[in-house]
Image (cartoon, helix red, strand yellow):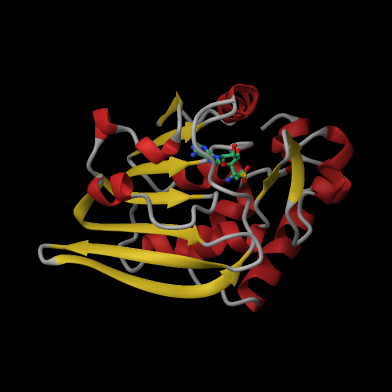
Length: 220
Ligand code: SAH
């Protein structure tokens, strides 16, 4: 790894190890996810001015009124998606943003199909993920409310923006046996939901309260 990827001082491996310790204290148990987050440089996904804060337990601005999700949320959502399976299979991600969550998913998946509605964010994410040599990712500039019909159904679906209700198209594009993790609700009143699809239908659980940017329709 070159030195900017490796990080120094507040972006070093030591700092990432402290983040991992905190995550496990916060109740993230999956060792595979913790190892991947320890080894994935989060600071390269944000502007240099904020890089020294990359491993704090907070969401941070990435431009265009959007935020990179806090490490705990990335870890928790990935853990919910993974369940006991150990592997994510074919993943649909809605809201590429800066690409950090994408990087974590890609290391647990066969392939990640990631949709973003703000083109400059998608471009930046592509270049960061390329720097990390993560190649099992495809990008689509589109409204994620439409999913990605060409590659449906998906074993796993993760959304990092909150719609008022679960978009029906995403339910349709979830494979039987598949899992979706998505924040639902208006600003100030959102909670994480997990949807599991089986032969008989959908099992929906409402989980912890969260704060996400809104899931918007159309493209910018
Ligand atoms: N996981 C990302 C989260 C970024 S914030 C990260 O950590 O960087 C949420 C992202 O979802 C934003 O980039 C926003 O543009 C995008 N988004 C919101 N609604 C969307 C939609 N309907 N389709 C695709 N992307 C959407």
